[in-house]
Length: 140
Image 1 (tube, one colour):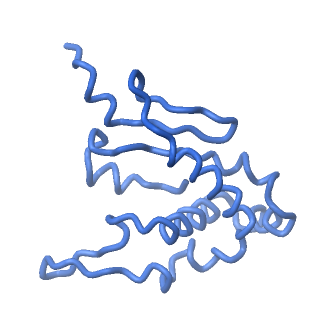
Image 2 (cartoon, rainbow, N blue to C red):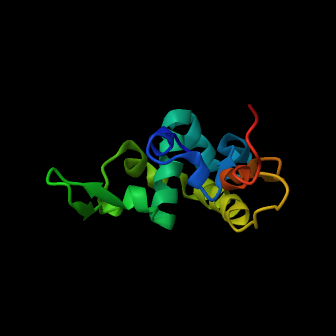
């Protein structure tokens, strides 16, 4: 959910436990009518930011929960006080968020398979385990 390119530039994928990919546009039909109207009005970019913001509030990921200061020290961020586009519109998609959160939680709790870096695939989501790739010898 959302655009997490900054994470890929900060930590190598080999250290990620899992990547949960939720195709949230596929869930819009399951959301209440008011949320569907809000999606049409806000557009996909803002809706993705809303869902990413809500996910950060729900999970408090370490790299999003702190900000480095000019002196190099870390300061906790108050994500609930954010004025980002996702935060500003977060209340418009509470139903879509709930549906999306349920899908995300199910895959986030999935155990890593022994043989493959690819976990379960549903009609709207997938989980991948990049750390499992390190178990395989490199080619070349």
